[in-house]
Amino acid sequence: MTKSFAGVKALRGVDLDVRPGEVHCVLGQNGAGKSTLIKTLAGVHRPDEGVITWLGEQVVIPDPEAAIELGIATMYQELDVVDGLTIAENIFLGHELSRGGFTKRSEAARQTRELLRRLGHDKLSPHTEVGMLSAANKQIVSMARALSHDIKLIIMDEPSAVLDTEEVKNLFHVVRELTAAGIAVVYITHRLEEIRQIGDRITVLKDGRSMASGIPVADTPTSELIRLMTGREVENVFPPAAPIPADAPLVLEVEDLALGGLFADVSFSVRAGEIVGLAGLVGSGRSEILETVYGARKATAGSVKVGGKPLRRGSVVHAVRAGIGLSPEERKSQGLVLDEPIFVNVTLSSMSRFAKAGFLDERSERKIAREQIDALELRPADPDRPAMTLSGGNQQKILLARWLVHGTRVLLLDEPTRGVDVGARAEIYALIRRLAAAGNAIVIVSSEIEEVLGLADTVLVVADGRVLKTLPASQIDEHGVLDLVMKGTAA
Image (cartoon, rainbow, N blue to C red; front, side, top):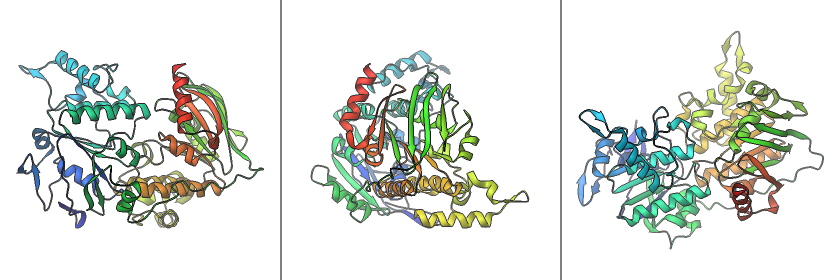
């Protein structure tokens, strides 16, 4: 299969065969062609060359409706639910259950309950508005929508990205049920450890080509997968930490911070050059703690100080002026202006610096953006390229560049490597280490406990809005974190 856009080749010859009842994993770095492949199978794009054979017959998939009619459903990484509708309305959107021109609401609700039960989320009500749900539960709604059709193949694009450890286990249980029923699953992920747990065969893409097609999971070592994806060996994923000087000053101090109904009594401090990690499950209050420190949420109690000076509660402006920068969990919707070029996104928090007589000096903006592009090895190195056209790893670098230009002292990083491939992930880890070594105070939240432990000097274990334990990262492992979280949640 081949596909080009405005002369740029996204697919240069991809081969993929999927068997009934198997989990076929597709791997590749950002920009390898995975998204184009998915959208071609889903009927969003038409291939320039190549053949799609479905159940032994050559087919053309002109649009998404045709894909669904064939029995191909797609779950995209970017949540495709409609916040203003209920769960049931989202699940049956576009194929509403009706009779005589009237929607059969009770039947839709019944079938929704059955789908949610099948997915292990029977406590969710069909009548709940989707906008009230967490990102993890929105993902469940998206999956239920796919299963509401008579499907033979389901394509899952990073389905575990917004799920915690227990929810991932439930996802795997659902996937095994689907494959046991003969449904094929194309599973796209950046988490290599997931492939070992769920995958049967693997296809690896690089630069729009199949580097390997249909190789067995059991017989392919991880080092070989990384080599196929990147063209090189990637070792020492977590770079060694630089020692923190004994006299390093306190930069961030959080004392007895609380936000009614979400978390309480949160206290920690971060010195210059230190990385503090918040480990816990999705919904434990980790992201809300970061957002409250940043001023995006107004604390109901406690204080935040930067350089010994208290911040005004609920004021992002005051936090940014004090030197705090946030890279949010949902970088596309909360962090970037996707239609704008790289240089605008990089200078967004420092516009007054580039203003002259009421006008922005775009020449100076581009100059400083180019410096950051070179320093962070952002690719492609074009300051005028729209942010939406970049891979997840490079979009993350834009956010870091923004705060570096601003002169930030405290970096709050919420899921800094979500949706980022293994090669770019190693680059971001190295960059975070360099920023800490330069004297920045860094706080990290990640759903991957291994990532928190691998990067942080100090770890706060969080559950149900409470800090269960604070200790050096060297004194706890992933099992210890989960043990604390499970006991804390049960309590």
